[in-house]
Image: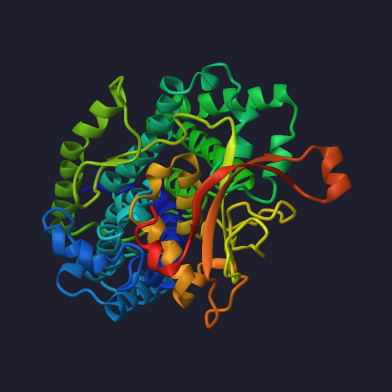
Length: 473
């Protein structure tokens, strides 16, 4: 069985497993702290209502067996506990079969959440975490050296993440071909970070260099992952540097960090090779079957990659085993933000005392500097960015959000950075207005201390009272 394992990658497996466990922990913590307002029994898109209308075969989930806020909390916090145990290395203390079962638990729990998460979990990094987590189940522990039939599928994921993103850019927005997209992206991206203002103010020629380097990293370097060492390590290291650059320039949940973790699995670290015993036959059979399954399921993602009608972030099976990825096939030139306000006044005219709700991550107060939240995922803030692009993204949840604000719902208010209205005294009226935001210039920043300048565009939602909110959007 010498062909089956690669002892030189023992440290790569260790680093990869610890990194993945840490990201699992962040994902479950995000679910535990946000689910009541988003998916709970009184959430904006209740999971219980979803499982009643969608059969198990289309969205496999534990919540088809039982769905309540208490059970959802148990799943989310249970996932946190298992992730913490994996981060501490508990799987290495178990027999090989026990390690596989332990890694299977967070994958099954998170699959259950994603498959009832609806719009709130419609991001590509959810499927990326599940696909990576599924392969991690079969990576083994200290009893055996890392199996090559898992390490190379991990590189296959990384290839599709990078190459898919590169293709969607070249095929999509012309500014990627003209090398000008970063003239806009840092300002219009979904959730800027604390350094995004400075990235935006870099010289134009440097922005073009950034785009050109991005094209090389995403369209050329991924092929080097499948070459012998040390070339594969060099390719993975270049991808890691690129992802860390993206971490500094914005907030993209755990997308960049998970890509880094995937790249680390392709790096051959210096150090002693594994001296583990040969892999047992049952393990070879199981891993070989999984590798064959990945090959079969890769057909549709590959066809999507080569198609002129390539789509981004699509799952082709309900278990999210092999998916297609991509980001920013088009880049917005102008940033719009929906600002939600409330008032206690009886009359909701312009002379009323309107007070704005402040979200945690999305821009609001022009003087408030963006914060770093990634890899933590602010789901409501991300959806608010989409709503500002088009009211069509508001769907069924935006009207419920307004209703919950008018009720002073505590779970919803906990999603926000600040509410000007205490839960026991909610506003009489709530409205939403659309503003155009742009970064201030150096001179404006020194004069006002504000990183944003905003201009009123139009009303997004006219003032509504509680009895009107459920049918407002």
